[in-house]
Image (tube, rainbow, N blue to C red; front, side):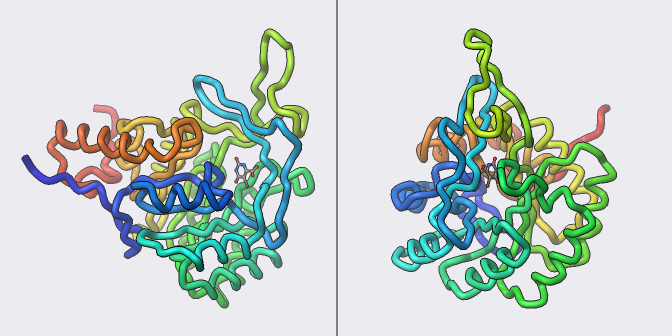
Amino acid sequence: MKKIDTSTSINGIKLPLCIMNASGALCSTNKELSNLLNSSSGGVVTKSCTYKSRKGNVLPRYFEWDLGSINSMGLPNYGIDFYLNFLEKKTIDKPIFLSISGLSEEENYFLIQKANQSSKVTAIELNLSCPNLIEKENMLGYDFDKISNFIENIFKFNKKPLGIKLPPYFQDIHIKNVASILNQFPIFFITCINSLPNGLFIDTNKESVVIRPKGGFGGIGGAIIKPFALANIHKFYTYLRKDIPIIGCGGISSGKDIFEHILCGASAVQIGTQFMKEGVSIFKRLKKELIFILEKKNYSSLNSFKGKLKNFQ
Ligand code: RRO
């Protein structure tokens, strides 16, 4: 039997396995990050961080049901120094993606500067798509007028591989516009998509929302968002420069889901909601399931089918 290769490269960053965690999922604390470092994930993404430590929104702020999850975490994190110090102390054998999500453009410039100084950070994942901030209603990912200038400023000083985590878009023209902005810069990768903002899940018996912050509204993740993730990945794959790889995120809970993300154009994938449910053992299971599909289809690597989604025949 042919050897099947599930490794990948994000613009030269080599991931031993194309599967990693999504930012936010079990990647905030010392213990969670150590577990990820010791797991068979292909890389580690840290919880989006700010300059100062934040407690985040009031509890309960995360809820899961069979088809998905809703969260209004509010960017709880220990501050960038905690994540940089954690990494400094560790021996690391896979790529580290430091997710940053400053509350202002200036804060983001500062965080990127700091990340540039750490040799343990392989790449920065700049989160332009946090949906749950009480103090800041708009997100840069939806502010088409501001993105271009903001990214231009970043590349005046940034030397690290830097990718951007995008929110979901629902119109072709929006993706075209964002892609044409990103195409002007040396963006290292994009990650799409973050959770679908401002969803509402209801407990019918209690006739109530299920999380406390923001009247129960929150970002939706999990199986239910997969069609939106696939659509965003495939459209960005069409409109982005071919040398900007896409990390797919959204609705993955099986090897089949990973296959679909790659077919749409993803070079690697991240797991959020299902990783929250299963913990680090998920990476081995998904790898096994992906290999099983590739064996059946007689593909030996991701490049055999990446981006090759067919039109209806
Ligand atoms: O912390 C959060 O509320 C959060 C963030 Br920063 C994000 O990017 N996506 C999300 O669903 N929740």
